[in-house]
Amino acid sequence: MARENDFRGRWALVTGASAGIGVALARELARHGAKLILTARRRDRLEALAQELRLQGTEVRILEADLNDPAAPQAIYDATEGAGLAVEILVNNAGLGQFGEFVRSPLAQELRQVRVNCEAVVHLSRLFVPAMVTRRRGWVLIVASTASFLPVPFLSTYAATKGFDRFFALGLAEEVAPYGVKVSALCPGPTESEFFDIAGAAQFKARGVQSAEVVAQRAIHALARGNRTLIPYFAGRATAFLVRFLPASLITWGVARAARPAATPPTHP
Image (tube, rainbow, N blue to C red):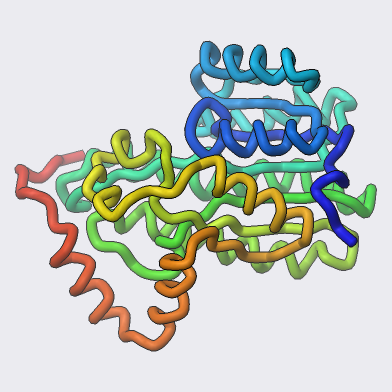
């Protein structure tokens, strides 16, 4: 039977490990005995987390990297698997969003979401998964969102990228299952993190947020079991079920009415 203890002594690479769900996932993997490679843009935060985990007996390495840079995935690979460090657990957690009207949003931020949320996920997976297939063992966690189940006006690009992540995870899971590699899509809802403040979408927290620690515990348990999709809270599971029976036009109309931001002048490229 698959258990979280299967992670003991194995190297896990966690992207976006400087805040929120990324930090919680790193701590949860460490709790189950994994060795950690932490990567994110903010080195000071990585060092603080690494120090915390080392004091608990976890072997940790850090790599400062910005996944908005198309060269970053290869640099991460070269410093780890390419240098002889077998990464058996890949956690594609790094992501970002942008709330607001698409025509008024900075173009650079819209494109950044596609690069980090989609391109980097594909690039890192393509680099690390082949060795897992060869070893006939490995785990990949891709952090999507409950937004992956429906179009979300005013988070249009973000929701689309997370839909990409979820479908990519499901397709990849089927491809690599015969080789003993497990792939899971984590689809959290509002969670304790910087995401909503950075994305300018604080109003989405109005109905409450889930603890990042609870999300991480359920995610790592699901990954060990080989569950291909995890929605870690009841309301999210209910939403994912119900939207299957509703027309997209009704969903987008309702979300738009609830979430429409105050008007500002359009931003030109």
